[in-house]
Length: 358
Image 1 (tube, helix red, strand yellow):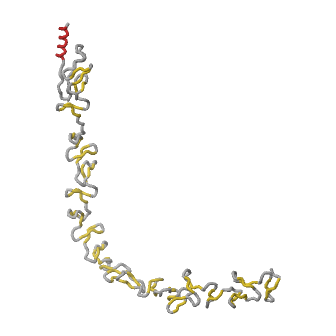
Image 2: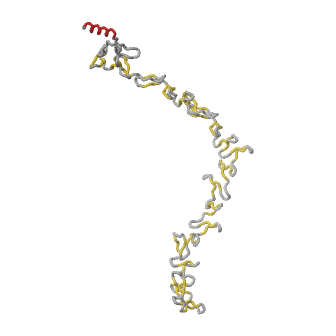
Image 3: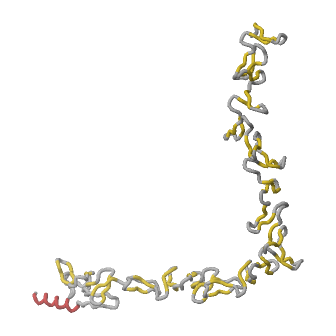
């Protein structure tokens, strides 16, 4: 019986195969064929041992997969240890173990799901043309994007801009001749004229615009009658002591007076008189600054000659007060009227107040 048991164990050892690292990075010990009825459940091969009915690998970093010792999921056997699997990169990217990420080859970058060229400074990658291009209105020269110059101009790399040929300048969308000092270019006749003038092809000379004439080295406007052109202020002005009003040069009035265009002279404000070269109020009146007019003192009014008490039409000022013109009538200060006293009436025939009126 013991001999039989020994023979069975020897047979089991002969069919057991030790696992070796293969090309697929799958390392461990091959388990015996499960279908072999002769294999004992605790036979774990050379790389593992049976512990409480389970196979435990001698190398703690390996795990038993039911047949052999292997690296945990997500790792691969390399250089005698389990290392994390390398990520699979999109071609032509390669995995960089230092940065631990997929990278495009040198001089390219990942965009639009591909490795595209890194564009020079100033250019950008056009995915429709699939190449580096300059922004619209520019072109690639001198190792950078430069402006596309308008017709007639060329790019000056030292100044970094488009320039006209020597002796010309950019105006009216073209390179035009540079005019001598004090002249400008007439774009219609393509001639240089003094500033302010234009070239008249009928007279075949530079002339001033209509309404102006050449004076003081420039075109100055024709001034209205009475005015003269002041070359310092560059405008038409009235002679000294006058000013422009009502379409004419009129005298500048002394302080306090104004120009009356009907009388065509300087006059004092209404109600004032000119005395000793000044506008002042008539004797007896005073100047009220609020109403800006001459006024009589309180309770007095101007009768055309002097300040007098205003007693109304029915009375007159006598003996220091208002006295009714009609006999026996009483003066009312508020209404400035005269009437018979209460209970009396005015008898037109007798010219006196008579009792009995209501």
